[in-house]
Image (cartoon, rainbow, N blue to C red):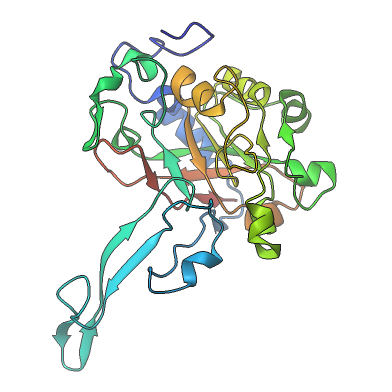
Length: 306
């Protein structure tokens, strides 16, 4: 049983959605009013190619993780029944399979992704998480997310292109940037770290900047509906691509397990940061995971509407 401040029982004993419950119809309508120009920006990394192609290695990812794979049938000799004739001179190629993994593409973590002891978020039994899926707190419980997004452009605030590898974003720094975060907001934290990949994959793999435990608690205390970032793990990583924090400060435990706050990782935030240009920080955030029953996560294509 979790003893730190948490949201267990807050939304009822059977709750599996955590702070997404704060996205009431009234909250969604208020979030939609944030848009002023109608410009739509994708916040997703691309999924490129298959194992026979070098294309996936051109997209930032954690070392050693299975790369995102996109298989397409075009000639009848690969993953499906081949192309289809659909009219005189017309052919059709079929997408047969997409395989993704945490740490390799833009995705959302479900509340069953991490836990401690014998219980998932809200006391649901962890024993129900099996190789065929989780019976509680799976990604299918998310539905869709429509909320006010708040961009924490930390590098711009500090006059940098991207944060240094060991940098940890504190609650004090977040408070300086956006003290008016409201319940139900989506906190989007830009580190700029994906820019490093273009310079050197080895440097990208040397670690990653991210939120500190204190920064995570600051956001959780503001009742955000979701936390998103352009890094691979919300919190920072060391050169072994692992978190240095103990369990008390582990960002996944703070957000997913204690507070029922879903996470979205490996976003591409450079276009959004450029469009906002430091003059504003709020926008409409929209994202929906695939309805994978019992899934610990799902690829997403988050959208920002300005």
